[in-house]
Image (cartoon, rainbow, N blue to C red; front, side, top):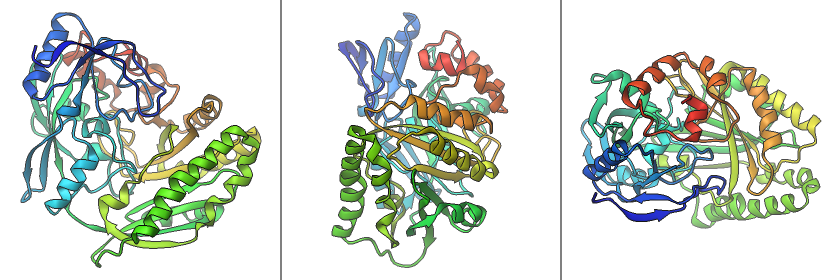
Length: 437
């Protein structure tokens, strides 16, 4: 074994709410080393999990025996600017990939609002971004190279090993270890941004218009207020007009991170102050600027939190959010994080949160160190009314029995998983809960 030795480690995720006991550690640099690790686990009836940036809030990446850290397996394999294709190793971080693509006049067509994740982690958990005409990141995958539980290596795409390809695009790490990912990208583009507060009742009354008339529309309802912070991103051929350095630092670093973090700490110490503190959030006024797409999509995140996010049918969004608003008003919860709402097009990936339906996403957050369970359970109860599908990397309280009816291709995924990993080499306690043993 060239990548596995006597090293062991204790590992925790970004939020600090998921931790392993002492497990074996591997830091592979090559596909052969990845293959050897899996073969060794298979022969010795061990379980193995790969981890990237650790940005999932669930236990999806928790290793029970052997942990593969992909930090050193994160190179560009190939770029084809003519066909707009890029192939990367599974541990490639989105933030690094975005800069590389930009240098070659290319970009990902859609991204989430953070870019710390590895490409394998982002697609495996159904990370999505926003845009009613655009799918999540898994929909941008052109082909995959996968190491199966027995150590064999399989190439798959829409034309080769199609069922495995579809399942592995949002595979939860359950059908194989992703080795390389080939993405369909687009020519680099500029996004024009308009950020402004809006009365939430007015926004919801015209929600379809806002979603349909913008390339990327999202908003953040501020609990304990009647306001939402809206963000409209649209492609433009005009020259970029980015924020000045000081304006960007003030808005994105000082206000959205340090000042917000201070407000969260004060609210954690004295929750009764939160409703008064919340009224400062919508006071920022209207901002307009433009920049390269990857700089607009992703934001810096210093303040740590716990998160739950549900995908529901898009046409249920306004009703569901209003129910959340009423629940918060009736419950006595004090909440210092906005409720985030985004939208995507449907896809046909079995365990994608947008599988076979246009989707709205409602995400709720709790500041690190505060009890998230009561609030999250109340929100989840509402989302259950709409056959809500939880983001696989964010907190929820579902299991295989409750999830199965929500995915039209659930049985296909289970069939493929049983074929390629009957010994459950890639399983762990979280996957046993959400997929079954």
